[in-house]
Amino acid sequence: MFNKKIIELTEKIISDGSDPVSYEDICELVKLPEKDTVDLLFCAHKIKKMRKVTKTILCSIVNAKSGSCTEDCAFCAQSAHHKTEIMTYPLLDEEEIVKRAIASHSGGATRYSMVTSGYTLTDEELDVICNSAAAIAKDTDLTVCASLGMLTEDKARRLKEGGISVYHHNLETARSFFDKVCTTHDYEEDIITVKLAKAAGMNVCSGGILGLGETWEQRVELAFTLRALDVDGIPINFLNPIPGTRMENRPLLKPLEALKCIAIFRFVNPDKNILICGGREVTLRDYQSWSMLAGANGLMIGNYLTTQGRNVRMDVEMVKDHQLLL
Image 1 (tube, rainbow, N blue to C red):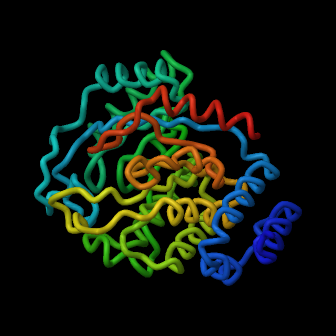
Image 2: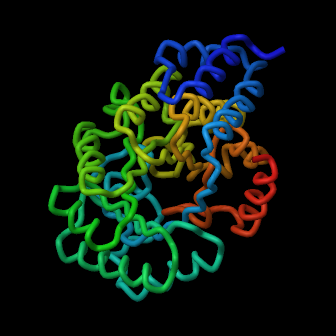
């Protein structure tokens, strides 16, 4: 027998064209016992299906500029505040960025994102990104995305005019927990960048990393912050502790807890794209296919910034199998 609260909220979300659930509603859901988790997952899938969020997104990324970042994000291998064994290099040239985009397209990706380390890019670096975006759009039908740190109004305009369709900028965690994760910039700077990207006419992907030590209530807080910002996509990452970072000894989330997180974000953001990204292999393990049943409609495929991903062919096959349930 399904929990009555889950059914009540599911039916409310499906029948109401707005975003009818409250913070208090969702805090009730996260307190439900583990025995109700599978029911919650399947109801999140039902919401996704009935609200017609059924287009599957397969996003690949290139680590276009690696390491030496001045920010002190506690989870990040690319922070200059940590001692990690990663490759560091300046911005790749246009030819290399485009070559990797074409390879990603051949592998099945529908989106390709150029990701750079650091607080922001210089004007000269921005020119390389825009030139690369134009070449990618010419040679493929990929949706071209970028994740380049903080924006100004001028930089956002240049990116939009240069061919960037989607700007990715994670909030990482809830505002109330942010100072436990990063102290080198303020949370409001991230909010402003999201707003500038939207104002320039780009779609925005913004999400976070779960398993940093935040509470369930703070996960709900993040989900509602993203709803208030009206972001177009929500990338959900799970902490994969990297040796040499401040969070190297944090435990992984359990698979069912991670899946419950996905479902909660779908309940709060019923019409948005939800993509499962870094850390899914080590956290979900054999339950990776369940992420689509828990309300997600997208995956990041291939390798991540500094860690290995899963075999792309396996992910493409997993998505095809899931399509039979839509």
